Structure formats: structure tokens, C-alpha cells
Length: 320
Image 1 (tube, rainbow, N blue to C red):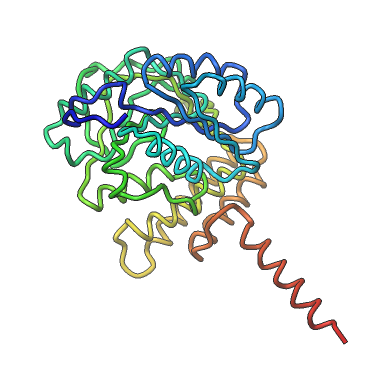
Image 2: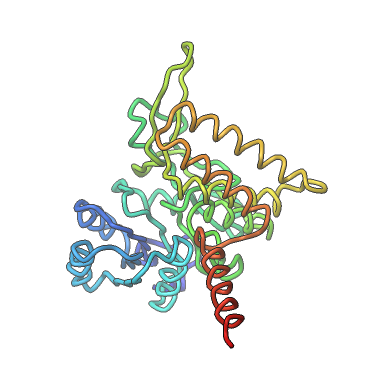
């Protein structure tokens, strides 16, 4: 809730966790229980899950500390985050902890985030305190020797981010036209462009997965790929292209060439290591082109609108 204490003296009671769900698994209640031990409330925003999953979420929402927001369709991660943050503001909280549905937080996560925030010398200009994490798909990771403290970042992932809502009001809402990927990166870039800073704990304080990473050996060299779906490949290619245009500081149209080169390398990785190669490579090409054209929102939405307009015009022209 709203506190009269200086921001660096804030505690877990000032924090509302926001969890975005989309067909969550049966282990979600256990993860939410762990979150509730460290914050004062949880807002779950569901993006069009099935009946069984919604039933599980309604059971969770029987807890007075849990608020459930149900969307009938998948409105995208940015839209859901904005809904959750608005609810947290309405409830009177001054901090939001953003979490993915599959992230498992450590018992000292929130305490560590606040400790790092308090230790930062320019804390009033902090927009995001991100969480270091262990990737569950890479179990052989070497622990970071520099466990204490923080490091300044260009961007951090959404999950595990602690955001002061007073600063969020200045930075602005998450960019809903991005829909899914690069929502967190764009937010951090925008915050930094406004003079704010982004940091991350050196200490891993949660378990998280980025894609479904697989390792491949090529001539003795280890190669990794994330195996994202075709839709995710589309959003990654499109939104990366937009960020290069808006924040890359490239002259003329060199941002498009830079993005094209990245997409070519991505398609090479897909062709070598992933399944559904043709579908994913087409999605990358489509995403790049839509990014160049500035077509945003859900994948294919502008085409559906165009088709509807075409059908309406054809019906009008066919009238006697």
C-alpha cells in the first residue's frame, strides 16, 4: 500500500505482484503461494485460457489477497501488464513485481530486489530493478561469483522486474502494439531515453525459462537455439526491426538492413537446428517486412481488416 517512508525504505507490504497467465500449468498455485509469502497482494491477468484453467484461477482468487482479471481472448502481454498495473494502482500500491506464470521465485527475492534498490546511488532515477535468474533449460550454468550487488543494463526481462509505480507514471504504459515480444526491451529503452536507469541483481533469485533451448554440436562447437514458435519468431523479427528504427540511431534506412541481416542469421539457425523450418522462416520474413512497413498489433490483424474492407467494398460495388 501507499507508504510515507522514503522509497528506499519500502518493504514487501508496498508490493503488488502481477502475474500474466495463458493456459497455465497445474503447478501455478504452488508458485503463487510462494509469491504471496513475499508481497501483500497478487493480481492475475488471464489472456483467454480454457475452462479448466480458469477454474483453477478462480480457486486461487478465493484468497482475498488475489485479484483475478479474465480476458476472453489473448490481448497480448503488454495489454495484460497494463491492466495489472492499473489494478495495483487502484489498490493503492506503490510498487509492482512483474512475473511470468512459469517463473519460480526464491524465498528472498523481494528482499534482495529492495536491498539492491537501496544500495544504488541514483535510486530516484531507477525505472526497473530486474532479477538475475537461472535458466531451467540450462542446468549446467556456472554460478555467478559476483553474487552481491547489481549491474546496470540496457534492458531486463519482464519477469522478476520490480517497478516503482511513481516512475512508471512518467515512463508510460507498456507498448500494447508490440503484443508479445520485446515489450520489456522497449520499455527499458524508453525509460533510459527519458533519463532513467535499469539495473539487475547479480545474484540469481528466480528460476525461469526463455524458449525451449536445445544444444547442438557443429564441428566441435556448441550452438544453441530457442525453438520459439512461428508466431513468436514473427513478433521477435518485427519488433526488433521497429526498435532498430526508433532507437538504433541509424542514418537513412540502414536500420532496415541491420534488421535484415539479423533475420538472415536467425533463418540460418532455424534451418540448421529447428523443426517446422519453412513456417518459422516465413514468419521471420513476414515479421521483418511488417516491421519495415510499421504494421503493428496482433499478427495478421491488419490483413484481416484489409480483407474485411475489401469484402465490404466489393459488396457495395455489386449492388444494382
